[in-house]
Length: 213
Image 1: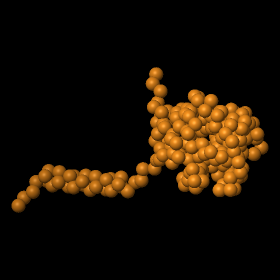
Image 2: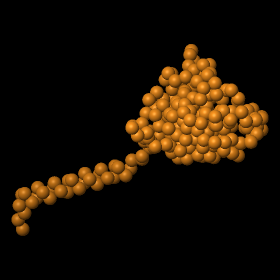
Image 3: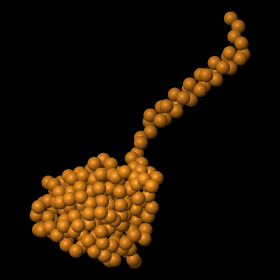
Image 4: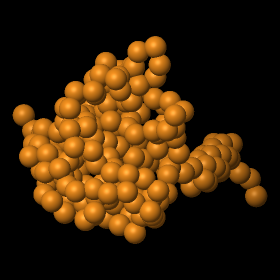
């Protein structure tokens, strides 16, 4: 049986394209979609979140332009609902409200890894700003954050690394003020002072819609 050259060429081309399509499909199926926070409102430099607590709600505007690593890190915990039902475990009136790391039973929440310290981004530890908590190692921040309840330039970078600010409270500062004044004590569970006697719970963090102009 004779086969025309044109038919043979079309058949070979069809088989070749099918092979490439299968290879591409296989490659795509093997890829993992890494949701690192940058996928959330990717074109919005200033995403906003509503933080609902057992004492009320307040809104935080994040600064992805100056602190992209810290903002995306924070958003990936929000996206997985990992901050829900956590506590503000360290509260010092006129200084700091810190949370995001423990359950109401003082169990540590899982970390998604440490991040680079962005304290040199130009944002200052001023009243009502949110910043990344960390240990002595400047690049040890994971999931815990804190709110500044006063201007604290000693936390800004100088000769040493500072603490990276990545947003500020735009609405509901009175709620944060009230939280900062709760009664605290030394906690045997955390082996730490300044722990609220009555838990202050972060019940939910909601990503707000992008503003429309």
